[in-house]
Amino acid sequence: MSILFEPLRLGDLQLSNRIVMAPMTRSRATHEAVPTAEMVDYYRQRASAGLIIAEGTAPSADGLGYCRTPGIFDSAQIAAWRQITRAVSQAGGRMVLQLMHTGRVGSWRNKPAGARTVAPGSQRARAQVFSDQAGQVDTDEPRALSLEGIGEVVEHYRRAALNAREAGFEGVELHCTSGYLPMQFMAAASNPREDRYGGSVEHRVRFPADVLTAMASAIGAGRVGFRLCPGNPYNDIQDDDPVATTAALCRAVEPLGLAYLHIMRSPLAELDAFALARQHSHSGLILNDGFDGPSAQAALEAGQGAAVSFARHFIGNPDLVQRLRTGAALAGFDRKTLYTTGPRGYSDYPNLAQAPATSPCYRS
Image (tube, rainbow, N blue to C red; front, side, top):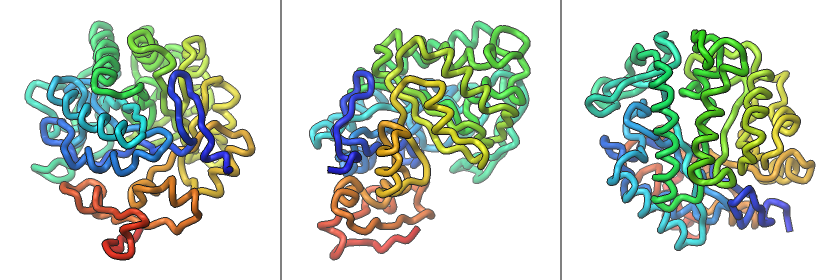
């Protein structure tokens, strides 16, 4: 049997196979950041993954940045997520929730009244986000967090981890890349601070390390993971030394004994992110970006990581595990419906048994 289909334990998380569904923003929540019935169908269809990492979810109203993305900070959101985790569990699957605070990457148009846009400093991100009211808009000018404010954000994450467990998730993943709040602290260009959260690389990684420590204290380190992509410039992030940044964060959280590190392939050709993660982290590694079945199997057989996560292939192939097991062809997907509303291009992709009669013939 291929190593892809062997069971795996990551901390307190037991996986039936080593095929992980990566977190993907799909913009199907309500404007109040509440998960919908369409999301129940979408995740249930993909329950054969060894682990589903649910899409980036805001730990607070301030953490919202994009339109129609979910939260985990009020009772309606918790109840709606519970419907999803129950459906996935009944189908034999397991889920953790990725916590994503967008920091300065967002617009007030996508936040409830009274919510703020915050960051390490007051410099606006040179990026745009989509809003349903006005289309593409510039990001907000953020409010620089005070030391007290940083403590409040850390508490929001801690509470979100507890809320995730209440909603039926088996754990949480901290999103530490893509230009969001943890990465804004980690990169010197977006962190002008001169206190204990800025300056040296050890100080700049203090914020994500504090968040991971708080979440681990709340729900157990064996139920907490984090995601990194060294050198990722997305959303106006400039990290002049991603190797040092990655190493420093891994050193800071190593004593916690976290469940896993979800490591993405670096966009920098000269940087081997997987080797870097193996060098500096003893947590189980979930490898991500650009894999198909054969390359995923080869990577695991070579000892590069413990599991492999798939994003794009899970969009058009709800039964991806079965397709990889049998060597069936993989379907494409419709890029135009990635962030639209409704089931089209979301929960209407057929499995192998349905494909001949009902395939919408999407192409990548």
